[in-house]
Image (cartoon, rainbow, N blue to C red; front, side, top):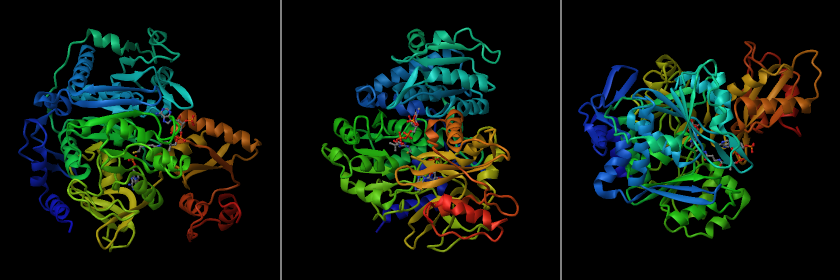
Length: 638
Ligand code: COA
Ligand code: AMP
């Protein structure tokens, strides 16, 4: 049993160089690599140091050259507009080479950074691939982030241009992007020269409002995408070193400062193509529907790059799992586009079940094309697993990974063989990820014992190579704590059959509706309110969203403010500084926060109490009465 998987896992672990050089042959290289890995800068590694290639070429040109130009590459299905637009590979290539020509005409060149702040529209895919075509490093920022978060990313990666749209459409409102971009530029230290805007009808603000208005003393040119595209000459794919950065994708860490995960070119392409063969079993002729957002890693890997590199069709969905128009929309998309493989988040499935407990709206569609459903972003709880398995009648696969790794660390490898599933486990480590569970001192734990989940170095191709401009932060955060290992920040255990169980984060990162957020960043915002002396934000279990953020504040002495009014102000502040995506709605005023004698707030104990779990009071607690006073607030009814 499990022979294919075991063989692949053993080869990737025992002889990674041969394993990955073989896998790399599935890409089209300008110079094929002879060397698998460069370990001269340990603990930093780079894959295929002597290879040259281009991922836009691998995603588009090579399929057209192979006679598949008329195959559908991209289906843009907008539930918000009620429209569908399909692009063949030949059409998508034309759009990408033209927009690459726009970038060239603006003097943007290999190694420059371009920030992409776009809703789920085709221009997002086109802009990413156009950057990849030129070796321009893209950094996509999720549209739900507020200007201040956008500004932090502009300051960190210093883009020369921003590509945006007039706006995004949410069920409850229209999001005007141009004022948000202008505000972010005013808050950042920008090197931005151009803002290129994809026009969408129905938005208030036009680029003409921003022309000739210096921001921070700098002249910025605001350009219309379509007009520039009409004047541009198509640009060819530039041959790039495999190690050239393809993109920077920011993710939340423990502190307020986002971490810029850097992905290379050849290693990433190789890993994605391998994942399509070994995990997802997606090939030319298949249609992959990943219901995520291009602003997240799942979107980068499995809306944009992997399906196109594999020569399949990808669905770009602008809408929600429920309410646009109803909880049957996933079924409608599967039926309309003959989807063979779907990817979503547990929270989306829970939202469907809440709106339509028996899943009748989805089940009413023809789902016969579907072969598998993959789920990632947070742990797939057993209830949701059973609900989805019954509803879709296909293998439902829990995928565990992170922005940092770029592709799954643990998954049922359906492309190799289907392993028996265990509810609550993402199955076994993927070939290339040598996963171990270690205690705080770095000792390996036995089967069944919970500890830090680590991956032995080197990480396989596709994982982050560093943090943007900050090798030391990469080493300090991930590579220094357990010798020779990458620390995932998740805790869990391996069972006797080698199945992994991921139980939660060991740090202050939380996951709200599949969106990774930092409680530290929220605490900074709470602390900035003039009435707040100190605060704590913790992630509480939430039946729909997985987790929700809950804030506890201590008022400055002598401050008299009505608690409801204060809560409203703080909620508005979080929305303004971090964004609607934080979905921050709870503020409780407390007289003191429980701390250790060294002053560390006992967030974990607070979380355990609020979640109704057993908790132990640390022996280092400063004043146990503070905790006792807090229990009725954290756990009403006790
Ligand atoms: N741009 C601007 N605002 C956005 C946004 C975007 N791209 N995405 C979300 N928001 C806003 C929403 O409009 C909402 O604002 P509101 O408070 O003014 O209504 C807020 O952020 C929270 O939105 P959301 O997280 O979508 O919560 P919800 O309650 O509207 O919907 C779910 C709940 C579960 C349906 C939804 O979160 C969902 O589809 N989650 C799946 C996420 C996912 O696929 N993640 C990928 C991981 S693989
Ligand atoms: P992100 O970087 O946004 O993809 O978030 C990564 C984090 O989400 C991981 O470190 C986990 O804490 C959590 N996560 C993602 N997928 C899973 C999963 N399948 N099971 C458990 N946790 C998950």
